Picture 1: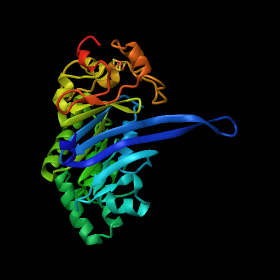
Picture 2: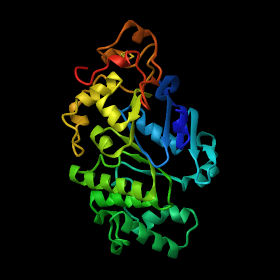
Picture 3: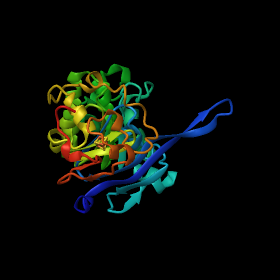
Picture 4: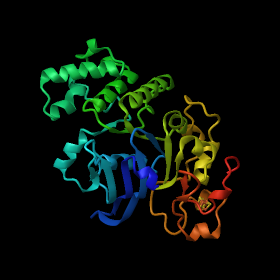
Length: 338
Ligand code: SF4
C-alpha cells in the first residue's frame, strides 16, 4: 500500500456519508442511512479505477463526495494538485473548492438532462472557461479544439443539444469536462444511458483521451463488462463499504469476496460490449445501504457464512499482491458455485 501511495493522485480515507431518516408530522430524526460507511482507496496518477456495485451501494455518492459535489460526513479526500501540493477536499471552503475544480471534473450519466437545452454547444462547453475568466475569443478557440478532440464537427458549434444524437451529446459532456484540462475526472455511469453500439464508441474515446492526456479516471459503473474493458483496477462496493479491490484481470479471474464472485458468475461471457448486470443479477435481497449492525453485511446471501461472519465485521485485508478483500473466508472463494 505504501508503494502505491507514492504515485497517488487521490487517496480516500475513512469516507462516510450518513443521511438522516425523518418520520412523522414533525419530521423527527429517527436514525441514519449510512450511504457510504468508511471507504478507503487509492487512485494512482494516469490510471482508471472502476468503482462498481449494485444500485444503492454508495458508489455514486462516493464519486460525488470526491469532487465535493456532496459534503462528506467524515473522512479524508486527499487530492494531489498539479503543483504537487496535497489538499484534503473534505476540509476546503467553497472558495477553495472552486480553485481546485479546474483540476477535477465530472462526466455525468445522462447526456440528455445534464446539458441545458437552451444553450448552444459553444456556451455549454465554454461555461467552465467563462467561470474562470476566459475571454469570448479564447473560449471559441478552445471549444473548437475540444470539439475536434472528442470527434465532433466544429462547424456545429452554434447548434443546440437537441440537434445531436445521444452519443454526440455525451461527447459534448466530455468536451465540457476537459475544458479546463483537469488531471482527475469522475465519470458517473457515462455510457449506461446510451445504446450498446454507441457505448463502445464512447468507451474508446475515453480510453484514447486517457492515454493522450494522461488523465486519471474514477469510473463509477454497475456494468462489469464495461469496467473490464476500460479499467486498470476495480473496487467493489456493497452496502456502503468497499469489499474488494484488485487489478482488473486479477479481480475478474480470482475474486476473493463472495459478492464479487456472485456478480461475475452471473456474467455469461467476458464480452466487452455486453451489458448484463441489470438483467441477470438478482438484486432483490441487496436492499438499500443501511446500518449493517454486527457482522458481515453480506452474510444473509453468502454460502460461505459462518458464526464468525455473523458476529464480526470483516475488514479489508491483503489477499495477495495488490489485491485486498473484506471477507473472513476469502481463501475459500471460488468463481463458480457461489
Ligand atoms: Fe461471506 Fe463471511 Fe465473507 Fe461475509 S465474511 S462475505 S459472510 S464468508
